[in-house]
Amino acid sequence: MFAFLKKIFQAKLPHAALAWQQAGNESGSAYWLYAAPVHLVLQRDSFSLAGPVPLQLDLEDAEALTRSLNTHFAADSLQFFWHQHQWFLRLQQNPHMETTHPQRAVNQDINLFLPTGSGASAWASFQNELQMLLFEHPVNIAREKQRLPTLNSIWCYGGGQLAQ
Image (cartoon, rainbow, N blue to C red; front, side, top):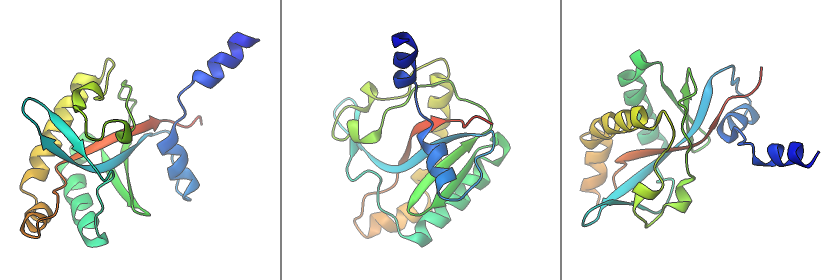
């Protein structure tokens, strides 16, 4: 009996899928992740995650970025959603990776907190493509002019699927 309870408590809850559903949306059989907009800072030989996390965006900027991301990644069956000041990412399949809440990585070398697991290398490729797309996005160019931190990455975490 204790082994059964231990397994229950160690199970990873699909936090993002639950939050999406609790907000009144259908989660279906998709795999859901929180997708926090973040600002990465180049250090001497690594990147660190700057606070605040998530990076605060106004509605117009969030909608523009969401449209761009969804247009770019449509062929990959990835879809970003902006809902109640929070981004979600819907995947068709489990990416087979373990993630870390971004608050644990603030002001630290992010290499210690990047996704792990059999899908981590594919995820790193997606992250690189995403960061290149964000680099010259008009929202970030405007933020730079205003001396605001740019949204130069998305930190995904809390993933999972709800049982059907």
